[in-house]
Structures are given as structure tokens and as C-alpha cells.
Length: 99
Image 1: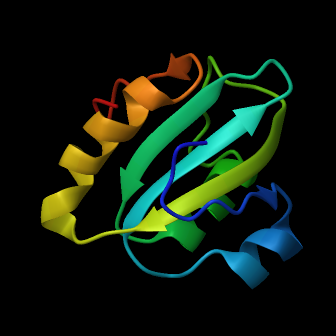
Image 2 (image 1 turned 90 degrees about the horizontal axis):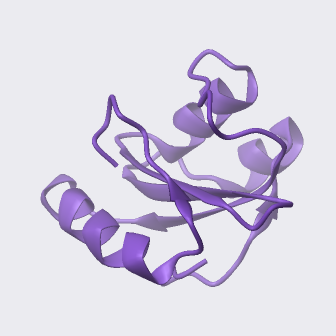
């Protein structure tokens, strides 16, 4: 994924708790079909745990294998998403978030 931080982590509760910060930024999920879901949030860890526990399901995006993230200020998030999306594999957009 085209994030400034090139690390990718397993999409599992222990990995999210260990690797994802409770700070704002953008995150991307990837699946085995090489599709990407990108979203801007206030708390990367909480959003990933919600996604994992299907409290915030993405209906068109299943079988998540991993995640990446990038920290950025609130004012930068939308612009950063706009730059990351064209660089990513086919992106599933979240209608509620506009991404």
C-alpha cells in the first residue's frame, strides 16, 4: 500500500492492539483479491477494532488480510487520502466517509 509507513500488519485483534496507534490518521485494509479499503479516522486503533468486530462493516469489502496506516493531522487527512487512493490497487470506497 502507498503509505509513508511501509509496514503492513496482520488484521487480528492482538496485532491491532500492538501495532495500531490510538491517534488520528488514515488506514488501509487489504484482502487476498488485492483490493484496498482506505479511510480517514480520529483513532486508528479504535476504527480497526470496530472494523474487525464488524461494528463498522464495509459491505463490499470482505476477507481482510492486513492493514497499514499513516498518522496525520485532522486538516491533512482528506488531502492525504486523495493522494493515496490513486496509488493504491482498486479501492473500495466508503460512502459514509466519502473515501
